[in-house]
Image 1 (cartoon, helix red, strand yellow):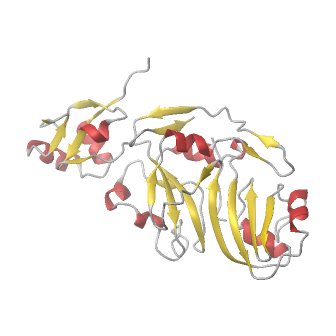
Image 2: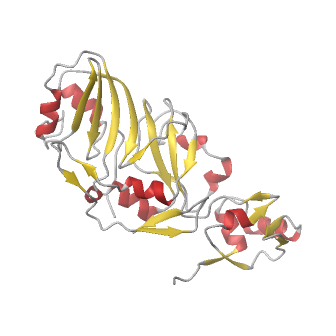
Length: 284
């Protein structure tokens, strides 16, 4: 049986954004920190960081935020950005103010550009982030596309062939899953993440994307009851769903090749997961 990790109370709460260690010590002395119904007046005490800690440890009567290992799914609305390099409000402004002071900090798993809405993952677990965006993990992303002009009818064959090249990029795209929903709406599934890929690949086929929405990452769907601008803490099942087997164009199936194993760690309601790679993803 694995050993339960422990942490100093002041360091744990400081890393969660509750204040400096000195401020945490003041909270403890004032009886404002309670563990299992009993006040903790020693901010230097070591406590077991268990899965249920947010329900057992309170500050001013409220359960603490999830410890490091946090993963979120967020329904990104239009008009907010994932990068300081892009003008406009950041997605982090949609989160509780204290969460913006966490250490390690929350980061987006890849990016959605300002004019793209939909499912966006965030985590403070660097290993999990890099595992999801690593090409060998084969984590596909599905998008609902609205187009300026009617589809020609040959887009599916072009995208499935794996020969389409983008402007200023000589390397052909990997095969893209495609289905036409009606004359000006389509669904595409990407198995790589090039800069503004969906918009650029339709431009290469003589069309223009007027609206773009991501509704799936891997095997994880954007919950129908999660409104734009809202987020949800991911449990172990949600994280495992990201790495679920999927299907390539042409009916060929794949499963993750990275040897992904979900390890439960201290986290939110159920658990978050730490999944023992590299690379970076770009805005779509």
